[in-house]
Length: 119
Image (cartoon, rainbow, N blue to C red; front, side):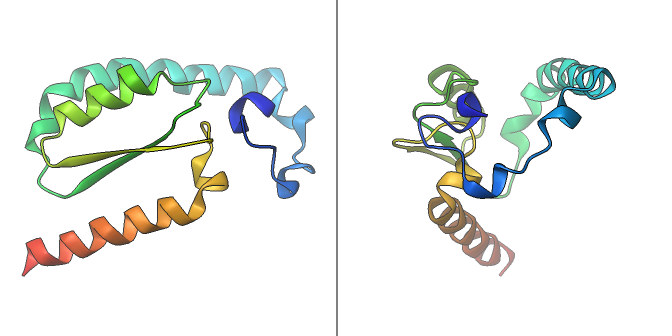
């Protein structure tokens, strides 16, 4: 949990998270299988990123310990021409939990652009 949320502290609402459930062999196998499917699918679809027509914002915590944002997020940003890339300082992987205001602002921004595109 500390690695996922770091450098921020784990929010109180996650203190009751049943860690023993996440560490069951069946759950570990399911998570591994899901993760293994993401890589080939992302690789297969990478040439279609430029075809996206909707506004896209990529938000990443600058201190993410799970994702190399300067490689992975930046690569995605370069593959989606109309995308914006926002790095959120003093945050890690779980920015939807630790930087909710910034995430919601980005959603509102692209939602407004989507309306403009539809008009």
